[in-house]
Image 1 (spheres, rainbow, N blue to C red):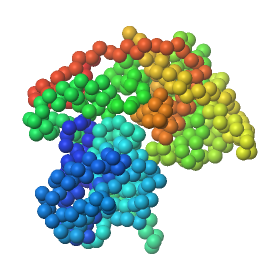
Image 2: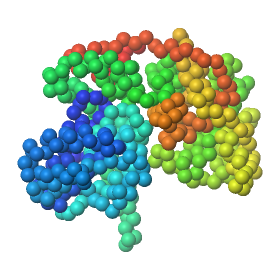
Image 3: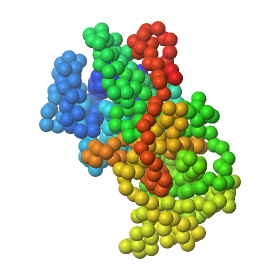
Image 4: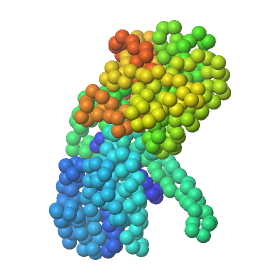
Length: 464
């Protein structure tokens, strides 16, 4: 609540009092008559829990406050308002078109898409003089928005460290101004909520007895393991980049001349396209050695390259890279690029530039299972797939993929899944038999002892 940054995410583990903090923070400016606050949950059933909290808290803080259950709005003695809203579908954002909110609070931010968040971001503006305009959010790891939230708040800097973003704005008179926005991540753990642990010391046991992914996320606030994660086998351990044990990310090395080279492709225009180059060793192990990802820098937003331009860039990359120059490269792509029902196909346009493709196998569930088989570690800690540490977008997007809520065995295709699809076509060219994952044996420190003694950082609680 005391942070000065424009955006602040309070989150991580369960039990930190996140929703209560958000409900209370919205009250900060209700003595200003024109103040409007907005508190959001993804769906109305989820929102009802927040409303119940407000019904308990707000009348005690401001006895004259009145709640309108039809408009889901609190009106305070000054005339200030706090509105409770939901955004069940992305198109519902138009319900907030033309409106202004001095304060916006998102509860469970990872349930929202980046598009939804940024649209409401544009509604965060003053309703009159003297108000502070800012955004607060809370969340646990996991959910459809896990990837972009992690990229925006977690990855750029350690917790409690201000992240500065600078943008240049052109004014009507032709002058240019450099504008700044700041954001920060404040970690939450159950240990911050002393009253909860006093009232129910066994709540720790509830969290510790959950399945491992949920336990890691809800008890320890891990952003690398969460409920709904598709590829729970994934490991990125820099300590093992050299010995290549119990990690899928390794340092680049020179590819032997007798290894086969493949190139995968998933086309996108408004959404990103993905090109990945792969080497296959004599044991059938696949290495992702290079990538070309058509993203603007904003997650899941494409650079709008025409097929001919993509092909030209691919050809240039293969001429410039010593690993690829002069090699026979087999191109495997999404079969949809061969569709000529609406005119010349994407594949044909790229062939004119000298870049050739074969249609890949787009069987979704079988392709997903090939990921599981290849990511699985044997007893020596060796998987059947590695990616070079230089493939930053693969490392960013694959671990955060979640399951589709309707097609529960499949990956949710509304995510940034373009690299996933492109790699899947290559895997299906080299299917392997099922392999049982043999995760490393780990010793887990007692979380309460850890917190009380301060012996170790609770965010790095494993010892190999």
